[in-house]
Length: 310
Image (tube, rainbow, N blue to C red; front, top):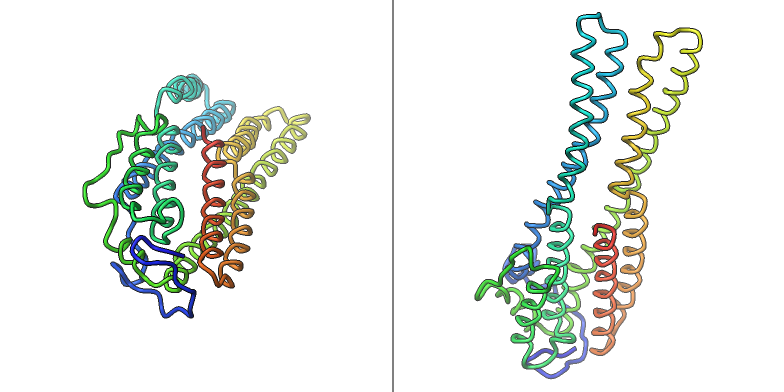
């Protein structure tokens, strides 16, 4: 692999990865990536909060309605009013949510953050399109294009002078080829494989948990309905069980636990294959090809995720 300053060098056994800016040797990303990531995190929290609010209101309405069946007469009208208010608020949420920018901002900000991260690693590794003496100018131009893309325009992201090509990025780019490769294996591929594996397992566990809640709630509703055949007052909890089942199903579909678990598992498996190939690569051309393939795999995951959210 070549850098902007030196001709290609043969791969030799690497020493321990350097520690450019941080004690753990991880390079510092461009300011644009940090800003976009923070924006995506804030938008994600607000978007999911709105989704949770709708489900909570439905459950509250069901609880209040169930309570009104067995409540003393003076409280029935109060409970019925509370149930009506809760249901009305779900309609308000349904009307207001499409006008809020959080879901779109979450997806768009993550797209910019991940693009900047991918470009940073390509730059540090000295691979296309940052494999020539004009790499610095090209890198800044590519960051601008990402921040000013039509989809990212509502975010109003701007570049920070002198903070996009960080000192640690420059240090990594100047390292011998073998050390760059070792650092990429550890801090890019290794960390991303761990991340995708953990996320896949987490989403799989969440899917099973919420599916269990939905199924148990349906069984509860069935049991109440059967008892109601002989005991009229037993119908009170029926609405609650139905609401719990529907809410668990709605939350599962909103977050897409199964889809994301499968997506992250496939991505982790593909990256494991690329790590294996990169580990045994001995020429600059092969190393560059492995890095390009790995970054393409991660970009593909980002694109699939964004398509799910928009």
